[in-house]
Each structure stands twice: as structure tokens, then as C-alpha cells.
Length: 112
Image 1 (cartoon, rainbow, N blue to C red):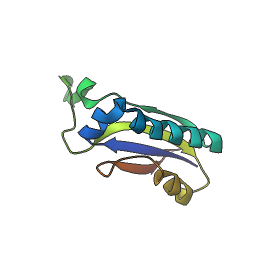
Image 2 (spheres, rainbow, N blue to C red):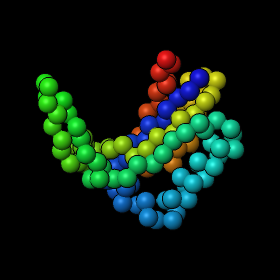
Image 3 (cartoon, rainbow, N blue to C red):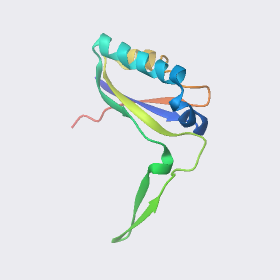
């Protein structure tokens, strides 16, 4: 079963991305997923200020520069993992090196 580990980070976390100690934790985690043979994809994302939002307004579209959504946590990236069950996915989620201001959402991939 495939699961997305959706990483949400605080603004301070985005600012720390240039810190080697912070980055090393993410590199180590990514390597662990790879060595376990369960990572099927994923990516880190640039800061929310680089995003652009497209909203549908009837037949028209409204385009606005970010950051969106406004909130304490913003999308920082994701991993796609292939593990036997939700319990295993949750175990890997607890190992994500987020700060105490971030979160990891675990969501099954839609099977089409």
C-alpha cells in the first residue's frame, strides 16, 4: 500500500533549511527510506512565498502570488512510501525530522 507523508513546516523551519545540521537530518531520513526500499517518490518544496494560487471563479480563474494558505504550518514537501499497512507508515512518519512546530500527515494514495 502506498502512503504519502505530507510534511508541514513553520516559517522558522523554512528559514533553517540552509543550516547544515538541519539539512543533515533530512538527508539521513531520506537515505533511511531508500535503504529500507520503501521510498517511491517525493520532493521538498520551496518556500510558500514562491507559490502561485489559481482559484476557479465560475468560468474564470483568479491567479494570485503566494504565500498561501496563511497559517502556522505550510507545505514543505512530501514522501511517497510503499509499506504493508498504516501502522508501518505511521512508524516511519514518527521518524521524520520535523521541529515541534511542524507536522506530518499520513494519507493513503488513491488507487485508480
